[in-house]
Image (tube, rainbow, N blue to C red; front, side, top):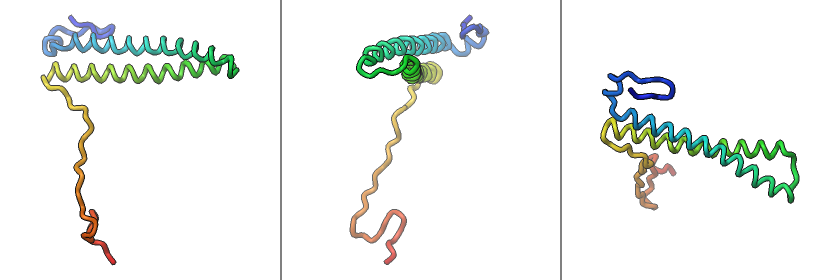
Length: 125
């Protein structure tokens, strides 16, 4: 039986999706990495601001606010990145194909300068 958080998944469903355990472990790791990023980021930003506060004094509440907001943004970015990797793992385990995450290529058209035409049609004089 596979555990997803506090919920146990039925054996029939786990047998239908053999990669479910790996995906659940990956997601758990991603969330823990995001939590660690938040804690270490908040402590690091706060310590950095305490050092800088000797040259630029401002209230403690602003140091806390900036530290928490900055570490929240960093934690969100790390969690999102790691969760995307887990989604790719799930797709690989289910379909056997790695999803293409590269941005689509836009073909460039070459237009001659003096042809009198634009991409919208003829030039009216």
